[in-house]
Amino acid sequence: MKVADAPRVEVSVALAAYNGTRWLGAQVESVLSQLNPQDEIVAVDDGSTDGTAALLLGRNDPRIRLLRNEGNRGVRASFELALAACRGQFIFLCDHDDIWLPGKRDALVAQLRAGALLALCDASMIDADGRQIAPSFMASRGGFRGSVASTLLKSRYLGCAMAFRRELLTDVLPIPTGVPMHDMWIGALASLRGRVAYVDRPLMKYRRHGGNASPHRRAGLAQLLAWRWGLLRAVVARLVLSRHSDLDLSCENLAQPPPS
Image (tube, rainbow, N blue to C red; front, side, top):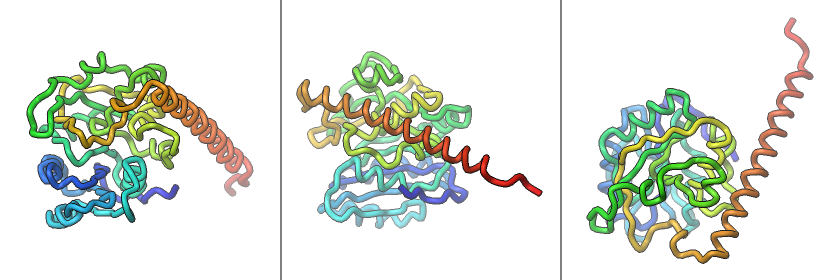
C-alpha cells in the first residue's frame, strides 16, 4: 500500500468517524488544543449521514484534512485509509467519541523520542453522557501486558490511547481483513519489532456506549478464538513477508557496483 510522503509534520492524528456529531466536536477540540501548528488530523468520514463531514469542515482549521469513504466501510478500512495518508513522524490513533486530557500528545511523543516504537497510556472510562464508569481502563484488564501471548489472551492495546513511530507503518499496512481489530494488530507487531512504552496514568477519557466499534464484548467464545487465530496467522505472515523484503533489498544492495 502506498504511504504518504512525510514533509515537516511531527504528529499526525488518524481519526475515524461515523455518525459522530454527538461527541465529535468536543473530541476534535480536545485534540486541536494540544497540536502544534505543523501537526495534522487526518480524518476519515466513513459514510456518515448526520453531518459529520460538515462539522469537521466547519472547524476551518488547516490542520484538519478530511477524507471520505464511499459508503460505510467499517473501522478497519477507515483507519487503513487514514494511516496511509498520515505524513507525521509520530502517529496517534483517535476515535470520534473520546476526549484527550491535557498532556497526552507531549507525554506519548516523549516516549517515542526516547526510542519506543509504540507508546500508550491509561484511560479513564466514561459513559455516553460523560459520567465516569471506571478510573482506569488498564486496571479493568488486569494491568498492562504487551506481549503477543498476552494480547492473544486479553488485548490491552486500546487504539485510541496509542501512538507509534512512522516506520511501523511499513509493517502495519495494509491491515489484513482477518484480524479482529486494527489496534491489536498494530500492538502485536510493535511488540515484536521494538520497545513498547506504557504511561501509567489516564491521559484521556475513553467513552463506552452502545455504538462502540469494538466487537469483543458481544462476541462468543468461538468467535474470540477465531479472531485470535486470525491475528496470530496474520502477524506471522507479515513478519515473514517483511524479512523476505529486507533480504531482497540487501541482495539488491550487494548487486550494485561499488562507487567509483
